[in-house]
Image (cartoon, rainbow over all chains, first blue to last red):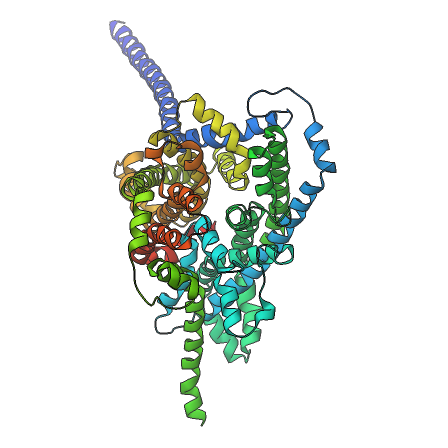
Length: 329
Length: 277
């Protein structure tokens, strides 16, 4: 009997131990999972710390001002005092012919600069993609204007295009082509064209470099097999280069369009939007309205909001259209 | 004939390219030539080489632009901003790409949206922020602004590059007990080297050349940067092109030197992110 009792005790005891074990295990997993939660929160926090510094500066100096601009666009803010006037500014814009000119000009700038700059950039890239002596020096030279400030570039070209002492008219005179001499920037007929020319001149190297990178990503054996199958150089361009450069096109066209819709420095340095309003872009218009005689900041920010929406619509259309062309290879 | 033609062709082609390159760069050469000309020489002969070299205009430009002081200002602002930017932007780009969940994708879009905001929109509210924090006429104030405004583009380029960095190394480092930060600083950042250099260089040019921001936020004479000095210099010597060209020369040629050393990285790296992004 005692033996039985002992056996039972042992049984209970072992059961108890097992229970204890189970209990310990259980609480151990709980501790572990609690620990895991903390660890997860901690790593999540650690990851967050990677973003926080950049995000902080970005929120304070870009996002917050943009959001408050939306508010100011609904006021008659003159830089000091403001009162809420609803959508008045936006209504005023509809009847303002100068604003219309500025928007039309901006579209002209964006459209023509995007097309010309990228066409020339692509041509240059195709030419400078081959193996040649000093080819990298040449790339460097064509890229060089990109590094200078548009203000400085504007001054230099402003001098070159000056009607009396400028280099361009001087050369035309020396070539006995006096009838071609122009007041290049003072004549509303040529002002826009000259600004387009200078902008394309400055940034064509940038497009070139992006296309070059795209070209170098195209596998060479594709060209070889195409040649073997008897494809001429034009066919090779049409069926290999052009489609495979799609992602470079996307980047280039997007960057140029965004840049041109915001075009400011070149115009400010060369014509200040004049003569009259003939070369004014939306960006220079905003500046003129804000810093000009009236100091109509509320109105100015309203225009900038419209410009922002404009850019947003344009770029989203472009992204969807251009991305569709891109292929994996 | 056939053989000769094959040999001559590429040379003609190259010659045409060189002529194009020289014509392309003429405006920049013009700056140097005109800066060295005397006033009479520049008026009579704006196109060609100087007949007599003079440095007199450089002296004028040097003094009026307070060259050393403004170079110091430009250098300080540019280098500190770019240095800090490189760290915070690549950290952000790394987290955005590696986490790759809804929250971080939203952050990515938020950052990208900054690229299409026209600066004129934020200009005046930003000025109010600066006044409120008493950041006007301080170096750190304008550096903070640059960090905020250049974040978008830098993160765009860098994140495109992070996508191409293989994950395996980081995983191996994790198994070896390497913490998140150490992995980032000693493994990921060295791998991102080329993209980082590109971003650093592009932002160096951007900040060095920037005009509106220092114009608005550093109005004090001793704080003015080179571009702002040039602007007031041009205003002062309106239509007197000889000193103006010297002034332009003094601000343009430091860039040419940096560019000469760094062009290898630029041309190669500029698109590392852009094309893949």
